[in-house]
Image (tube, rainbow, N blue to C red; front, side, top):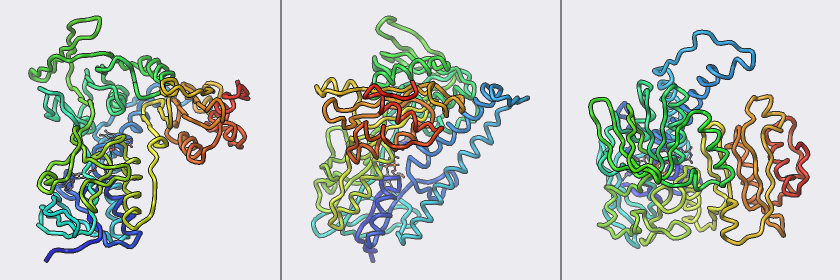
Length: 475
Ligand SMILES: Cc1cc2nc3c(=O)[nH]c(=O)nc-3n(C[C@H](O)[C@H](O)[C@H](O)COP(=O)(O)OP(=O)(O)OC[C@H]3O[C@@H](n4cnc5c(N)ncnc54)[C@H](O)[C@@H]3O)c2cc1C
């Protein structure tokens, strides 16, 4: 006898588990099907984000930053560390513990909200106007019927043609987060968010890191001024970054990998390394859903085709997160999940991609929201810019972390904030003020008029906002 639900969510990552919680809060009988299995063979809710993405990467970024601080910066504070040693086994154990706490947190939330959880792969048996049937294949096979289905099956790392992941020498994000020794020479293919974060972790722990990027520009999605600053800081830290790279061959021999590539000035070069992390993007995961069988439409790039409110072509079938268009970010997936649950009960939520913040958790961190200066120029929008360096901020000096800046872009006529770009300490936290400001249609003057605590990094936000009108107070 099939179990019946108002909503069945397929996928328990940030898009899926948050959608399930919101649906349950709204009084809908809700189930979530997720197939992720931890190293112990048990269910591990939270998707790629919790298991091999956002959470373990941030745990290792923090641990490796502590190691670097102790080795290179504590002495500035008068703290001498003798016999500093890396205990990578403990570092990885701690990372696994952080992941497990998040897995368990979601189990707790499911129980609290009375969400039925099924461990296994969910696939469509039937989808139509009179409801859907989902087969769950796992330790126990089940059939679920649902008035609504939310697909949140996420994404998988993309491999380079001819260089499949073996997770020993050629690593995806998964292998890159579990290396049991620090590679002497580490190659990273792709200077996007994941490549830069993973490269930073292993550089801090002692690897010589070379990052090869196909695009001619560094951090093309970021504001150019911020990207230039990031390039200066990262290369000074010791990351070797090559742009405009075309890889012709990757070959393995014993424990060595040779990457043959060319750039615009050099026709053929070889990078020898002990490990290579391939971080060239992620592909939507629709495998095993039986999308074709029930006529669920995919777009030309393999994403589930959805409209602006995450409706698929099938009635009462929705899709959110990495498996649909838009930025592959956990918080974007969550916002879509919440919005879909609310749509199901007839509410009218809205997800504004223009106010989705972007963060790169390198050191210094990079974060932005809204338009870049180059986008405003391309769109012919007149703007005024204000910047403020952390070197002039009292709290940054006290922290000993003065690299980077805050940059505000505001409409030349109305002063409405159009974009905020930060490179510097705790940029990931500071950006929240800019998101709130943009959601409330604030002007740069509004931010300049608000009292910010002293001494705090947030004063750099106020000063950059004031700088739009050329009246920063501290520079
Ligand atoms: C190394 C790394 C670092 C990252 N850091 C950040 C960050 O700091 N901030 C940020 O915002 N984003 C980050 N991301 C991106 C973020 O992880 C994704 O955007 C996010 O996980 C997408 O959420 P999702 O719910 O769409 O999918 P996922 O998290 O991929 O979850 C999908 C779930 O569905 C399950 N599933 C798939 N098919 C089926 C099926 N048929 N039946 C049952 N279950 C199924 C999968 O097993 C998985 O558990 C990072 C990614 C990586 C790889």
